[in-house]
Image (cartoon, rainbow, N blue to C red; front, side, top):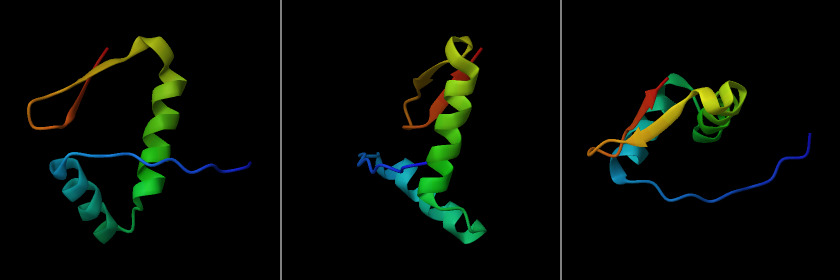
Length: 60
């Protein structure tokens, strides 16, 4: 599978949360790739919105 790069901007809160995952040996790229795969497997069944703290809330 050919990999392509993307650049994204994140609020400081999310950046700190992703950085904290590195202590658990989880890379930012791996985490984002996993979340995107989950999202697209579930398709239109899941809607999401951001909360006031910059986090993501998932709804079915």
